[in-house]
Image (cartoon, rainbow, N blue to C red; front, top):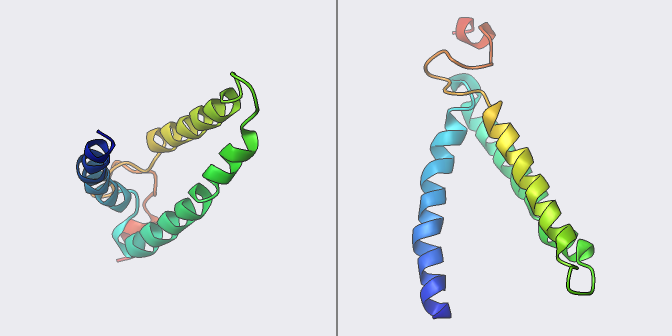
Length: 107
């Protein structure tokens, strides 16, 4: 059963995530800075997310409700992610973004 769940996680869930993040990140930046914006934001996100297990281990308390600080940490991280998605730039190709007009007139 564990092997089946691991297989489903590695194929279905991982593929769903990888199919979305590349197009979502690309839409957050205008064409002149798209490659740099995607690279820097991805690496910064990986750097910060890499410490999440250590922070969760430090927050874990003994006892039956020791998991609660870890759950709150996860909920706060998810809330920050949701706010970032909601206030993101939108689609950089349709003019409905927050980049302003400076990058449009540069070319």
